[in-house]
Length: 138
Image (cartoon, rainbow, N blue to C red):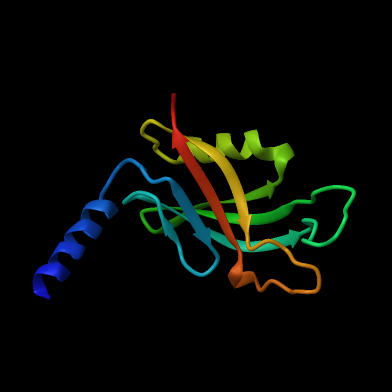
């Protein structure tokens, strides 16, 4: 049991001390900071609105999510960024995240918000997650 604990601790220590981000998905939530590297983390500070079209409804447009994202360096909030997540702002949001995250042979493939809206169901702010999906650069 001690060996298992030590092994897991070592893996976590190595992962947390990295200067490069090399995962396939980064999930950013509202309840705690998401560590990207030993010096960088993100946290959704506030959801301002969610106008996405709920599942089961026919809408004229897909909608968008508007949020405030905290950017932390060495555990101190360095900035709070106003982001609008939708297909029209993908390139702008991608450029922002790629300027902050030290990527090694990766690129942002998609930026997603979960959970999906469903007609008649309220999503609590603590349930929201921003997901950055990465793929290999070619």
